[in-house]
Length: 144
Image (cartoon, rainbow, N blue to C red; front, top):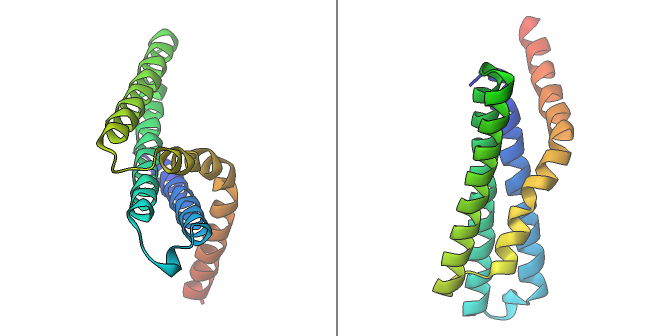
């Protein structure tokens, strides 16, 4: 993977997990978990973790698919992107169904955390500016 793509994926993953953690804390506080931990709180926690993990998988798989697609010809690229999208969708749905039937995971929490991929995609330019600003300051300090 190229350096730019790796940096973008890292920023996407950071955005996904920031969203997941903020949402998790908000929901657990709304459920009044500080008054006593219950099994439903564990299910919500596991739902957010599973959703964050699935969102992270999707981000990394998209990056690899795009990198492969750039090297192919136009007709092959479209087919590869469609197959990759279908594969990601099937994997997420199968995981969600399996986790639903185990009863261990709160499914709305899973999909709320999975939505973090969309939030991360919109916030990635902001995270990029923040991270690059710190990097530029560090580079400037070391040049002196």
